Amino acid sequence: MNKLDRNAEYQFYHQHLYEKILPFWLERAFDREYGGCYTCFDNNGDRLLSTDKYLWSQGRVVWFCSKLAEMNKTNPDYLRLAEEGYHFLSKHAFLPNGHCPFLVTREGVPKEPVPGKGLETSIYADCFVVLGLAKFAAVTGEKEAFRQAFTLYQSITGRVATGNFRTEPEPIPEGYRSHGVQMILLNISQELLAAAERLQAPEAGYLEEQCCTLLADSLATFHTPDGRVYELVKERASGDDPCIFGRFMNPGHSLEDMWFIIHFARKAGREEAIRQAVKVTERMFDLGWDHEYGGLLHFVDQEGGKPRGEQGAYTGHPMLAKLEASWDDKLWWVHSEALYTTLVAYHLSGKEELYRRYQQVKDYTFKTFPHPEGKEWIQIRDRQGKPADKVVALPVKDPFHIIRNLLLLLELLAEEGAWKEGSDHD
Image (cartoon, rainbow, N blue to C red; front, side, top):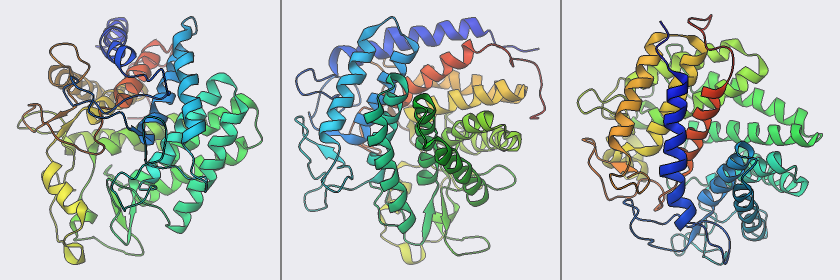
């Protein structure tokens, strides 16, 4: 029998979002003088450590404020915050060459994250600016926001095609392709496509072709027939890669990407892609699950457990230190993504094993991450689930993944039809 009580689940997530997560950010984080949002809180949520603003996070904030405005049309506050964030991006997110700086001051002045290392340290910042601008355009019909997003998107895809880009804080080892880049391109292409369709823009056809190409490339390059997803794949190579970079996997990225794929595949009627995404959801969840302490590990080997393999010519590469130091972290974003992906995969497949995985990650997540005093989530935990005072990617407390996945869960649980026992995706 279908065990899911959709109404109870909806009420649980609605209360958690609107009574526990959003109050922290709405009361403390938005800069009403200069615009944008503060995210440099300590992991416990007690102190604001810096008023600097990472464009990575600013674009994401505009996305979720726009999404909140879309889902709460009677509350003008969310639209106002989205508009303020959009204006901050319009004024401060673009360098003279049209690219995005990684970091700006409170006032919006570009600032080197590491002195002497440049302003353009990660193309992910550019991607998240596109994400925010595109969602704002889709919700408001703002044509200038779409134009800015599409122009930046063309710049991003051009840089990726030539290999002329950086991806700090996780630099790509020379000779490898990154699944992280591939998945974010699919994500922002879908957001731009939605905006183009809303505005009846002529770019819609091109963007749909981009989504189809990215989906096909991802399935052919990073996926295995048994449902594993490699985070890095050696360019111009064949056979097994003995290097640790060619063996490790990122369960959180893999699960997040599966709902990107599912969303586009549902729109495009790509049943085979949905079946593959369901398979990956099961496989990568099981590879990433920590059977000793519970929760999903940050990085794992292709056979599970701690990443291992040869270092070869990559000795001293910063990603080696990251794999060693953080493979067993338990991270907020991984678990919020797993919540949504396992539930949408169960929704489409009717497979009871996916319901079990959803309940498993839900139990762990809400036992582990919410702050006991209601200060949002303690986002980084060690393997045993204890708070860890460390930096995993950016030195920020970023609300994006939690808020986005709670909103998506609410949309899914409210969706009529197709919640049935069993399907042809088994």
